Amino acid sequence: MILYDLRCEQDHRFTAGLDSMMSPNPECPACGGASSRVPSAVGIGGRASAGPSREQMPHSWQGIDRGNPEAVSHWRKKMEKREKLEEKYPELAGDRRPVLAHEGIFEGRPLRAGDNIGESVAKATAAQRAEQLTNPAAGKHSHGKPTHGKPGAGKSGVGMPSADKPSADKPSAAARSTPKKGDAQ
Ligand SMILES: [Zn+2]
Image (cartoon, rainbow, N blue to C red):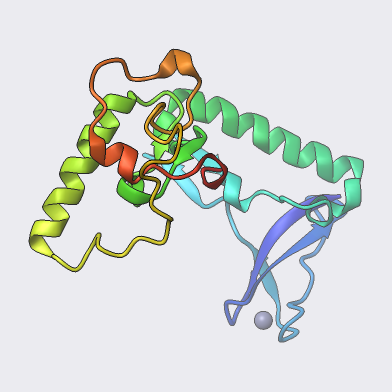
């Protein structure tokens, strides 16, 4: 069985598993109209089709027909192709490093594993300051509890392993708006 994305004349989109490439397209489940297969969406400058993005791939067990071997291998091939493509064109992959902090000064500029912490803090602080100048109301709301004075709050910027601790510069703003360890996912 092969999964196809289909679209009817009224632009209803749906996915159906077909026995083979030669199988007739099923009728639209919404309106009963005739459907056609939707070609893989993204092309890169005419060189190659990028195929479905990771977001478009099935995430659930149902999405791969409860483990139907053909459906699984169909998507595994797509995933492998995608991975090769992302190696060649890293911009397709986006930033998939884990987010360490996304609150306080890092709201909208998440701190990710591998970032230079001192640099990121400086950048985020500067950006926040600029935002406050243009829009004084922004940045005043804070949903996190203040961490002043809590033991360990200022010790390591964002709960990083001690090896990655910024050595010299620890801007006080970072300590003040640092989320608790449990908050960074
Ligand atoms: Zn339809």
